[in-house]
Amino acid sequence: MLAVARHFSVPLVTFPAARLEAETSRLANPSDLVFAHTGCHGVAEAAALAQAGPDARLLVEKTKSAHATVAVAESFQGFAVACSETESAPSHFDSNREYA
Image (tube, rainbow, N blue to C red):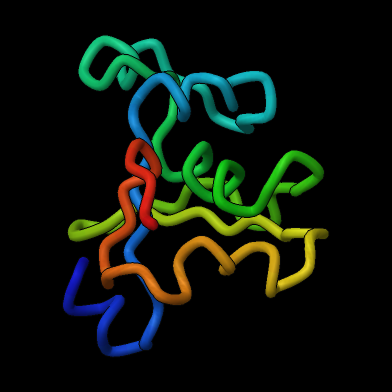
């Protein structure tokens, strides 16, 4: 994942399970099985929504392949706001940590 982020010159952003679980009410496909394994009811959809912001909407529900699962959310916050935390941060941004 880090190689893909570097290829596209974007940060790799991660979220703790508790942050993803906070998005459960907005998920199209919540899963008790996923919860049993990860501590949250969805990963791809929840991460897309968490990164896109509180007013985001899911454009593409989770789509699985043999190698990856993806979901796409539309953000209604300005691009500068969405990436201001990560512009000068390392290529991996852990949402649990603060960067000076």
